[in-house]
Length: 119
Image (cartoon, rainbow, N blue to C red; front, side, top):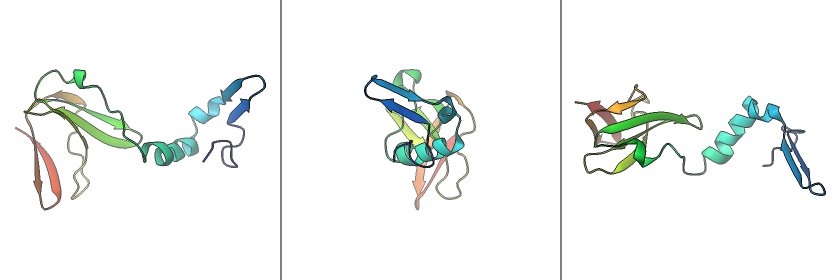
């Protein structure tokens, strides 16, 4: 769905003769545009939450909000970088409230429920 349709009229200007492509500044602040991007872009592809080099040692983690979704990525005890939605699948509660750090993070699964506990 292009941004220059009825709801986004005037936000994008394409002039092939002048080889110009411009996006009006209001597109970057528009709640409507952001909501549509969350659905059309962030809802259909992998999300970049961070780079593995940010997590130097086992137990390091970082929590971020990307495209309206709370995500957490960690370096686990096998030294693998893993990413998850930062919410409990059972009740929807936020799993990790800190922005980042280092801790022993345990992920367990039980009857379709995942949770994170720091020990």
